[in-house]
Amino acid sequence: MTTLLPGQAEAIADVNALRARISKADSDTMALLLGQAHTHHAWTDQPVSDAILKEAYDLAKMGPTGMNIQPMRLTILRGEAKEKRLVPLMLDSNQAKTSTAPVTVILANDQAFYDKMDRVFPIMPDAAAMFADNADMARENADRNGTLQAAYFMIALRSLGLDVAPMSGFDPAGVNNAFFADTTLTANFIINVGYGEANGVYPRLPRLDFSEISKSY
Ligand SMILES: Cc1cc2nc3c(=O)[nH]c(=O)nc-3n(C[C@H](O)[C@H](O)[C@H](O)COP(=O)(O)O)c2cc1C
Image (spheres, rainbow, N blue to C red):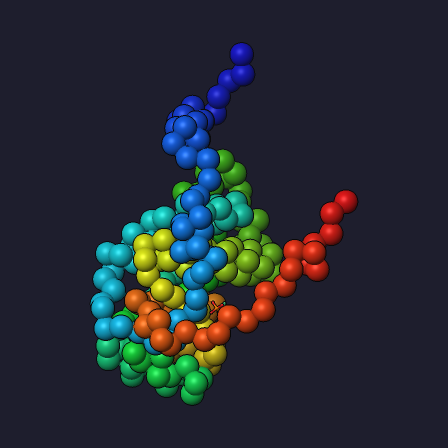
């Protein structure tokens, strides 16, 4: 008989219980998450609470990251804090849509994510030192996994019926200086979140075909 790791029996039961309930998402769910979802540029005035952002994060945090490092950090901005501190740092063409979005979130990566390794990856006691001793590897992992978490977060927001608009059109040094001076955080990208005004979406741009982006061996 194979010996199970601590917690492994619960993990196996979880997988089996899920498979008993569902084997794939239905087509409407796929459409809501990706297939018919759009990036939004205009917003209704329906507010977005921290509670729903937390609900989305609580789902997104279950997405996998390398060595479970979870480097994404959120800075949530509304009202005057957004208008005065962030909007002037956005590209001109991004300013109005950022001002009118009910909430704007700066997605940053904690470059010192390894401070939490003991908690998030206790199975490897020297993991923190491994990153602390190799700045290039730490940055690469922070940026890769923070971006993955950002994508999970956007999909999770869509699963709750919210719309999102990611933006990299801002002054990154300005944002780092305004929000993350004297911290270990670096801005990744910014998302507007709300209930999109359908009239504001842009036409769908072409997506690359599987046949042109893949090779099978
Ligand atoms: C990382 C990232 C950065 C983006 N930056 C901007 C931006 O600065 N301004 C903007 O209007 N759209 C920006 N976009 C939106 C994309 O152009 C848009 O999501 C893409 O064209 C797909 O549009 P669709 O979801 O309506 O099909 C960004 C998207 C991503 C993922």
